[in-house]
Image (cartoon, rainbow, N blue to C red; front, side, top):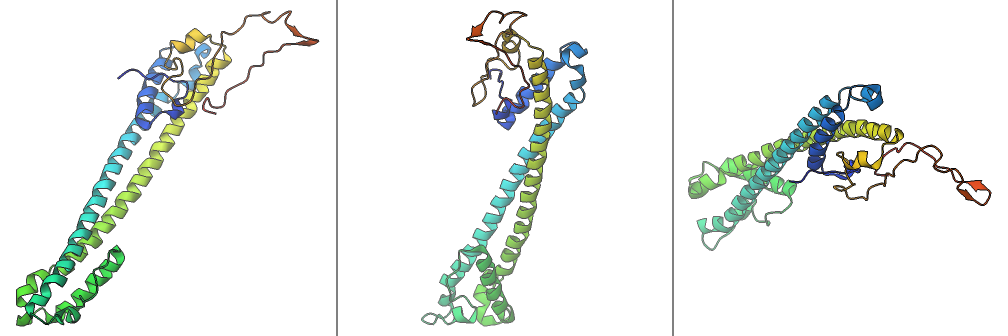
Length: 253
């Protein structure tokens, strides 16, 4: 994979930013540890890099855990629904020609698709079944009817686990974003320091900032900075052309 170079690091994906910022830290720390190269901005940047990397990986793992928990919950819901649907089809064979058993066990209505309604439906059916569970008449279907309660409990349990996983992923994502913001703030400070120092374009193009590729937005041109007197004698009518320097708050805006 080619090295990413960009003057718009905020446009990079989390993964690409992680890679880019690590190279940026190495680039900046390679300068002499002197005020001429903004050494007061060196503090903690390696820790910032390490923290962002750890938080990004943690967020990825939390996302995987959330997806796994959601899949497990959906599987549990499907198992409960299928058991109830099959019971509605097969129970009337207990007394051929008479499907009143569906009324007895509260399975007359269609099995709902909505999960909350499905759980209510299963609970009502199980409550109807429990007093009859010892009746020999229902013995052929007892093993199947006895599955309702544990299948419903499995859905309830997996829903709790899924909720916890969703919350953990949200927290991990917020922490990752905060860690990236810390990195971004320091990097922009360094960027503006070197801009304020009037570094020539060659300085930027040979750096991790490159020519502005790697981001979605076009790069901000950084011209060769003029020497003293470069604008002497340049006039527009009665007004002298002035070159105004100022800090860039964020190269993405």
